[in-house]
Length: 415
Image 1 (cartoon, rainbow, N blue to C red):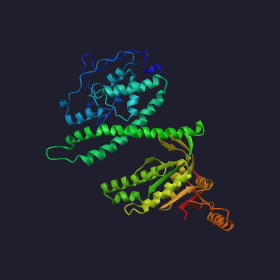
Image 2 (cartoon, rainbow, N blue to C red):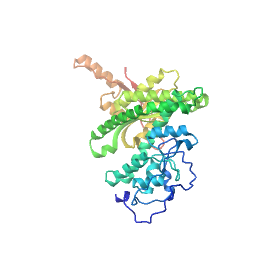
Image 3 (cartoon, rainbow, N blue to C red):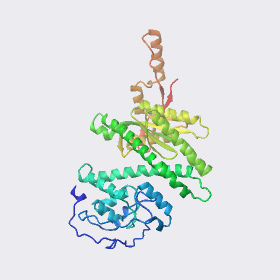
């Protein structure tokens, strides 16, 4: 892993910043930083640099906020980042002792756009590069894995940041006489930032502990990656028609209500929300009984909400590949296909899922078998009759595109 901090032996290119610290024109305005307003420094690839063998050069003087077109925006960025813009991408990579190409991969993986050689990076950017590269150099992560860490973290936090800005700044910063929304935002961010940071770390540690627990409980090493799970989709019926009929604000409120309700129900009953897709949610559970309860609860809850359209749910059970918080494989595709053919306000499951419910004693093989067991228990005094939570009704087998002939079962709550 010496390539992270070592020299490749190539001739060191000329520093685009020049001996006096002034920057060469690059076509970038320098108003966006990788962790700032529009952020990004992936543009280090636009300029060649040393492989980390040279001593870091002294950074130029911080950007004067008063010289920018929007000084308030710059002040908010400095408040959030905790430091000033000091480095071009070339200078940041060099100060971190990281090859330019690797720095570009890290920044782009985190979701930041190219900025050429604008001075938009801070000491925090240098430290982040140094940490990632240090993990690679120490052999704790491969270079590819470090890029995956950067990408998964960037994708997750980007969505979180967008949601927080939409919620907090739009909801709590009403323009007032003599003050713009941006001016009101600064004290709000100043108050919220430390609290949100602490809460984010707390939730991340909790989620990390839960995910680690699931992994260490796996029966073997293969099960850590390819696991047997129940996977379900819940889809709002007629959503495309709704998009043409509802105003944008109404549509947004409906989607938010659906996602919030689904997320709460999935979590409350022991499942995991994998992702939301506007009119559709994808969830998983370790066992068929948990997934069945979630699917039926979703139908029951939304059926009592007059503002919501009908819902359909499809669930399958089988081997699933997990990667970067998402799930893949035939089982996931099967659950998606079952959802597309499910009748309104019903849960449709696959035969393997039905077999799991029967094996776990959560559902009888048939209503006739359940009735016979109950009658035998009552007449023979052999004890309590089996207590089944769910009922299964076989449907017509049908061909499903890409998956052959499937055997769907209609799932309902028994009694």
